[in-house]
Length: 522
Image (cartoon, rainbow, N blue to C red; front, side, top):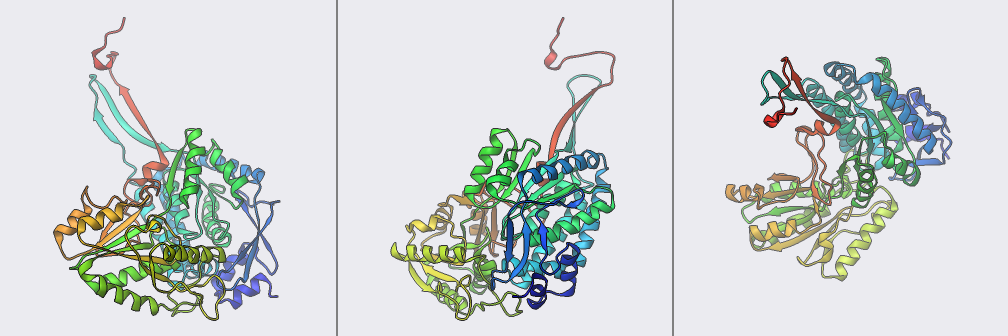
């Protein structure tokens, strides 16, 4: 059997990507460290974790997982680095983040291919994920000169009162496999210009991507004397993960994943009165009204439902269509679904690669069977792909009654329901009848319908779009949702405030000591 480094070559890894991995010590048969602190990789003693490509099961790398003791060392390194970093002027911090952006630009294609190999995203999506790192870095550089406070008038004479923002400390980031690089950067690069340190626990399904991205950022920081500011810990949920949630040295935990995971994070962090930033599941719907541009809607729905094999938190799970256009839209969607090119994500013509693992594919097929047993009609898809392994399946499209219980649940994979309604208000009510509230969209030419959808009586989601799909968020707009989605907001607007602590200061420049509210004491 080929050694890991040979597999990287034979699976289409270009020379730049191989150079990155070899610089991490990935020689033939090598095992990578699962903990990275100020000195680089730590000598980890945990179990060996194999990173395998979901496309064909090829071994990409072995990672020695971190233990709780090694996690503690990474946090200690981050604390020491934070003590120095917080004194660096924010614009200077921004300049260092700009250098990181340059390094990620240089290695965009190589890193994008690592993402494709490890989690099965097609090449365009793999490179798009690295572009998100570059974009959030550029955004953070601008923020480094805009961490504004407010000055307000004091009721006491000869007093000045103002608010300012101070670095929070060491921020813990827990990320999921479906965005193995971008979500870390959303948090880490904004937190860095705010003056914070980062300890990252990536998905155990994507350790190689995490190590490669971390190493690029670490090199830049080390060059400027800030090694250890970004730490990386790859370990189990029951030991390292639980230690991280309970760790009072981490005032903020930013966690991306399932609602079940988010509830656990909120419970444990809340008990110590820490902060959580939660980006959890989504059961996203698209409303298509009778006056919609059908061509536009079909293209958007196809990408939203099939992109990343339906494994985005913003993936389209439900298509809610007005009755007058329902038959036409359904026929067009079935035709589009049947033309999806499924195969090796490294191939340029592939539109949909594998699911992350066999268990995920089994879960989707089980959900399809459950939907059929409770009233849904399978229009197409949901089958194995000839000549491909157990992680591949054709995307499923179902026509479902509005009272189908499964409509209210998130199924994390390529499974989409079409539901017919009579009116806009009916569509909005059905869309909002979900435990999750992440992303939503409407297709219509009617300005009044669009504005109603965007109003207080419209979509209850954190993201509401008109004439575009539910996924593909841009850097600069705050990303996140309501209800079981967790309420978090990342990557835009004033989200930087989550990584800082607010401080109100009052300066008395008189020789008197007047009290507020006119109180006279003594």
